[in-house]
Image (cartoon, rainbow, N blue to C red; front, side, top):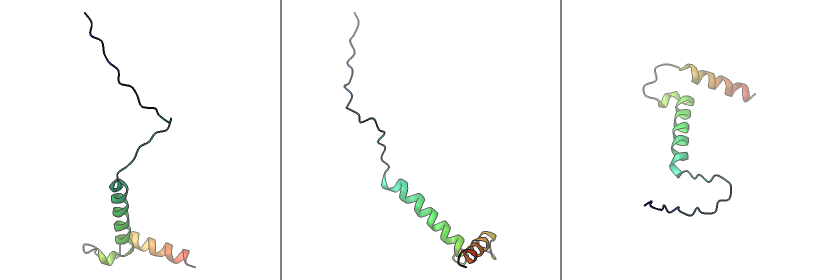
Length: 68
């Protein structure tokens, strides 16, 4: 005697993928990027920085070239 299986009815789909992210999935990486960018642009706020970092100098030089 075989047991019958019941299939679940599928909801109607619109043909597109609908994936929703929680708010923090976009907010946290954005916040981390902004904080790291601020530390690069203003190295005096970084307490462990010793001397002038090369990236800060490069960003400052690029800013000077763009502002002309």
